Image 1 (cartoon, rainbow, N blue to C red):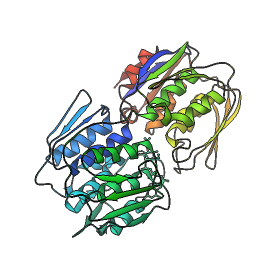
Image 2 (tube, rainbow, N blue to C red):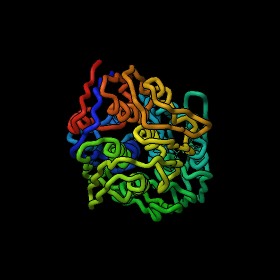
Image 3 (cartoon, rainbow, N blue to C red):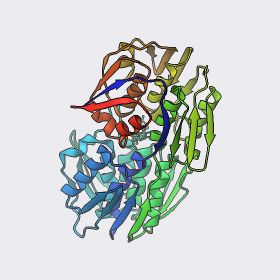
Length: 416
Ligand code: EPU
C-alpha cells in the first residue's frame, strides 16, 4: 500500500489518541495467564494487534475484538507450541514465551520479527527464564523452553530492557516464591502490563521503579482493564503541531506526565504549549531554535520519537542532531529524506540535519514504523506530491492514521 500526500503547512485541529501499542502487544499475550475470561479496553485497532489476535485464534483461543474492546475467553487446555507463521511478523510475539512459560511451564515458538532496527538479541529474556528454572533449547528458527517448576529468584538486567522486564514479569507471576528484577525498565507500558496482572490478582510491587518484586500466585481471576494511551502516537502528532503553521493542534486522551521529555523540549525550542489534565495543545511560533537530543530509556528522550523529530528539524534554521543510543540502526528514513533534497547525514550513531529544507516531490519507501511516520511529517512540508510506499509499516502501529491526518487538514490518500 502507498500514500500520496500534497503537503500543506497549515494543519490544525484535534486528535484523539488511541491505546498504547506497546502495552497492547504485551497485554494480549499476557491474557493467556488468566484462569478466567478477561476484558481489555482501549486496545488500538492496528495491524500488530490483529496479528496477535490471529495467532491466538490459531492457538484455539476464542477472542472477540470490537470497538477497541478485546475479550479473551480462558482456555482449559493450552498448547505449548506456537506454530503460527505470523509470529515473525512482529516483535511482541516474544511475549508468548513469558506467558506460556508462566501458564504451563513450557513453550516452543518461532523467532519473532519486528522492525529492523539493527541487531535485536533476546539474551536477557532467555537468561532470566533460565534463572527461573527453565531449560532452553535454541536453534536458528525456534526457541524451546521447559521447566518442571519455576522458582522465584534474584535477577539483574545489564540494561533496562523493556521486553526483558515484561517477559520476566510474565514468567514470574505464577512462579513459586519471590522474583526481584533489578535494573528493570520503567517505561509506562511496563507499569501498564503490571497493573493488568495486578487487576487479576498478581502480587507485584515497585512498578515504575528499577526494582520490581513479584510474589508468585497460583490463580489469576477475571478482570476488566483499560490500557493507557499511546505516548508515542501522541508525541508524533505533537511534533506535527510543532511543524505546522496552522492555529495549533490539540491532542486528547493522553497522560501528559508520560510526555515530559518531549513537551519540555518543544517549549524550550520556542513552541507554545498548554498542558491540561488529559490533553495537550501545541502551536508553532517562528522561529524555532535548533536542538540536540540523545535517546535514552524512560524518562529520557524516547528512541521511538527520534525519527519523527528529524522531520521537525527540517523546518529549523541551523544544525540539529539526534544521537541514537538504544538501537544500532534507527536511520532508515534518512536516505529517503535525502532523496527529497534534505541536508541530512549520519555520522556514527548521530543524525545531523541542517534546515530549513526545501523539499521536492519524490517516491519514498517506508522501511519501519516510526520511519514511516517521519516521512509523512516531512511530506507535509512539500507543496507538491510525495508518494510513500510500504505504508503497511505505519499501519502496524498507528490507529486510523490516514483519517487522523485528514482531519487535521492534510491532503493524504491511501491506495494499493
Ligand atoms: N537488548 C539486548 N538483549 C535483550 C534485550 C534487549 O541486548 O535481551 C538490547 C536491544 O538490542 C536494544 C536495547 O537492549 O539495543 C533496548 O531494547 P529493549 O528490550 O528495551 O526494546 P524492545 O523491548 O525490543 C521496546 C518497544 C520498542 C521501543 C523499545 C525502547 C515493543 C514491542 N517494542 O522494544 O518500540 O523502541 O522498547 O523503548 O514494546 C516502536 O514502537 O517503534 C518500537 C520499536
